[in-house]
Image (cartoon, rainbow, N blue to C red; front, side, top):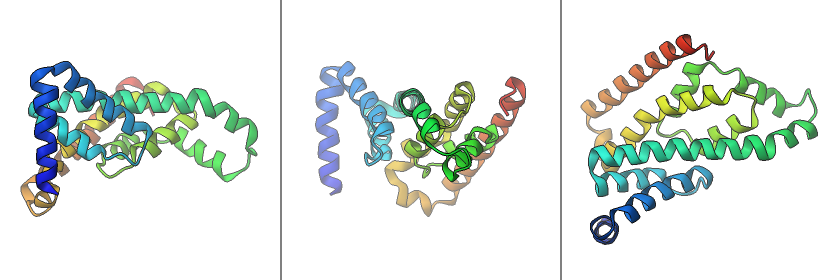
Length: 195
């Protein structure tokens, strides 16, 4: 299996990166945006692929920007396409609308931490955000900050995830990054009044 993945990445790198870098970038961006709307696609694999194909810095940037774009696209599809219909059809005192109200009122720092967790299903967060009445500015700010450690995790650690679980230094780095993201989210939340 590992040899197959290695051969596939080598073929993609030869075709998409060396012969036409624009195709490689579009492929890297497109797969991640598509994953934001189709949850069965493996985001970790796409981010790891971008890191391998474009290097640590550019792979990270491409993956981070693509993840933000995909999350916001998914958010707006549910916000514009389904949200108003849902609120008209569901009873005011129903469980779903109560859940949507809780999401609307989620503290900014909590939303950042949820989006920063590597195993949080982004598709579910995007749907919940889009269906709720959460401020799009608040959602975007949380995604921008929260996706930094998530992309870092899958890009630099996702390629050798099982090995990283046994390496306490890498796990400490992730914990420190999550703490830093939480502190930044608190500062941004107060500065821009996003609570």
